Image (tube, rainbow, N blue to C red; front, top):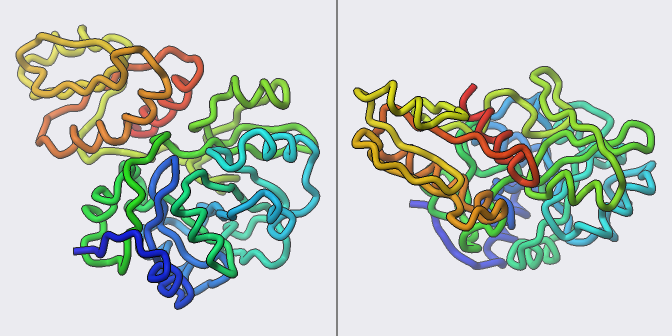
Length: 318
């Protein structure tokens, strides 16, 4: 079994030796390695079975370190770091030459953020290098929001999983790049478009690209359960037309009484988008372990974090 611990000195030693540690963030757990070590970076891609054309996010402990990673930084990028760092916002900026091409999939830009988790920030302050840390799961599967999720995925393949509890925000960071000075949303995430626009004004959304993606999380199929999953605006109708199936439902706040609904996951009875986002992946993990014929998910209202939840559910059903 993986070693689940809060031992930062052990984590530091493992990372300094070009090995990997699973780390908690406020979004999801990450599979972390030295951002300057090609040996460690290759281990991340191999462990996750992640395609090399999919870039990684660099994690730093302070916005003051941004100039060590990126250059030609637009003014609106600084406005966003002041508003959201540490936090669930990743910026894609022109990279400095010290960032290996393996991190950026050969691109001239790098994705970077300051995570908002006390244990991981403490670890980053102990290290002489930043970390790259994609989600700590096999490529394409449901992202992990607990140490146990990571352990279930990787069995004995990781020397250490830092246990930071359940992730507070529960879905990945919002990723923003720039065309000239103007922000572009490459991935919807835990910071809503409305929150971003309150800081920098209107933004364009460009969050799907199958070939040579500008940022992580842009591939069409991602975050997916093993169980066949359907996304619909009419769960009642779908259930009524599939009486022979053992169905699990994933809804915002609605309950069902149909006898072929074997398990229900309600993400927020209070109709709170943040609570729903926090609970999303935990609910998907539970449903995926129940030997159901189908998971039927409800499409959310297209507002606030409902946009980000719909994005994850759409990619889970491709």
